[in-house]
Image (cartoon, rainbow, N blue to C red; front, side, top):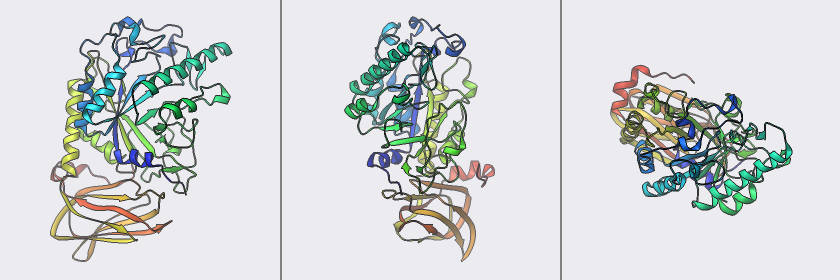
Length: 437
């Protein structure tokens, strides 16, 4: 049975992060690198006049995030730190946005991380899975050398990182890809790697298989598959995982906070998801043993727009309210647990957590709500993992029972608790569904 590393356990406990997209395409939105190979926007067009990374990270903190990933280089090839050949150093801005981002993360107690696409680079005419489109071996070697140099810069200059993101995965060395393992071991040996299995088997996470903030109803942190996807096509087969999988590689749910948009575009404020929808993403990711990675846009001023900021801050307030009133809690080892409640107690959330140091022990369980000795509601599932959340319309109960029917080892439940969040019950109970969507 696969087991997590200490770094993977810490990553899971952080639960909720943000990914901040910023690129030269914000200033030239009509640019699409695949439509005109060889053309790239003049770096001088990149000119945010009010850029404030403190504002970005302060909003992430207020939203409830514990870590933040900055897209240091997306598919255009334009880099947010001073480097050659195509970056802020050649732009009208001239600052080091990566350095500013990391300093803001430290200021607000947020764990920093970087996204760097190794498989796409419009400036260098490279496309998935990481080959120059010309097929020229000399050009491929030049591109590999560039990736190795730029990642050495990113991983060595800005201190310890929490997570690095390989969107599209990595091209293996024996197939012409960059040799990143020696660089990573030297500079970031403890970092969590999204889709980093090509580098090595340890400290990896996988894509959940969609960009809709939706984990499978039962999502295992162990898996027998691999995750080397670019996000352009959904693949539900990798989301579920396997309780006895050979590798511990928990799933991360990335989803934009604007409908189908990772980057800011003028006139698209109507695409901002309301906080209620963002909260739904939380339930269907964190509440199903995944981490939520919520996309945040930055506009041409260099700021998170006002409407986006307002909904993100509302999300943070919802998270605090809905889990502030803990009615009862227990923990321990075994297969049967009970919570005694006062008569006529109303609850609308149940939270379960399992000790994962030795892997997934729990394989099937049920939670019953009882009133006067009669079962009034039952929830059934297989995976608990780092966190499992059940939400439901306000229900009176005087006892809760957790029964673990199947297990691979003695289960250790670190939390079995219930909550009463009145704002949730009043405003959303008519929307509740108990299907597996």
